[in-house]
Image (cartoon, rainbow, N blue to C red; front, top):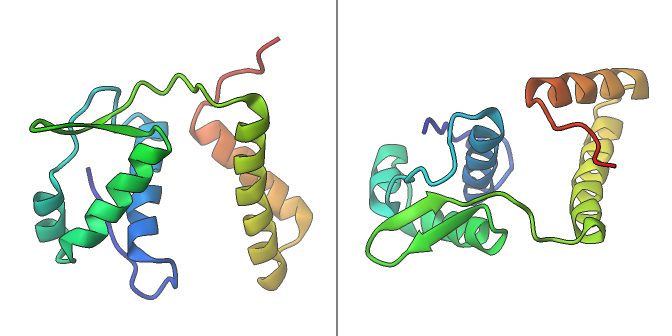
Length: 131
């Protein structure tokens, strides 16, 4: 797992870790049941406080992205979502709204934003719509 922290981004470090883990799972670089680095290992590798890693791992676990097995470590969860469609929609729409606000402030037009979104969807091979 390769994580690079951007201290100039304004995004909290723990959130950047969460983003990287989610991206690595979506791209297939991390797979179901794969063991993640320990809190201490990742903190040492990134030269950041272990509490920051622990916070990221806790949030990932709360979201059902990873599971922690006592004494064994943290692993990528089985991602069959047990969240309702309404909850999944709310979560994704909140993120899309955040992105739209950022695009507005960067004066990015809607056509470019739509194209970039389509490119991102293609990059992660999202499954087709279920009937």
